[in-house]
Length: 125
Image 1 (cartoon, rainbow, N blue to C red):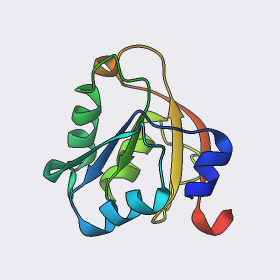
Image 2: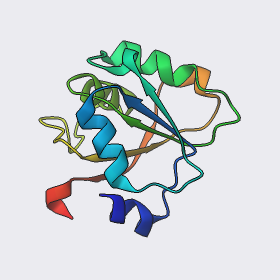
Image 3: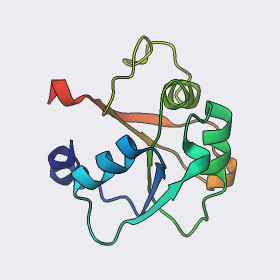
Image 4: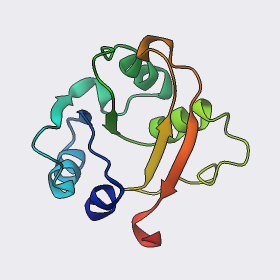
C-alpha cells in the first residue's frame, strides 16, 4: 500500500494513528515522506465513527490532508457515513490495510460529507 500511495502522489500532511502496535507498524511500513507529521493517539484505539469524526473535525485548517490509521468497525462506519454509504464498494467489508481516499471542500470543523476518490485493498493491488 505504501508503494501505491507514492505512485498516486499521496503525501499526507498529518497522520492520525491509533496507539495499537499493529497500526503503528502499519504507518512505519508505509514509508511516508519525512514531511508527514505522525500523531499517535490513545483515543483512536477502538474509537467509534462519531469519535473519529470528532477528531477529524478538530484538525486545524492549516492541514491540507490527513491519513487516519485506526480500527474497524469505526473506520468503516465513518467512511460509509461520509460518502452516504449506499453502493460504496466497502459497504460489506473494509479489509485491513485498505485505502479509502476521500475528498471534501471546506473546513475540517464542517466535515459532514465527502466524495470517494479511490478505494483500494492490498489484495487488489
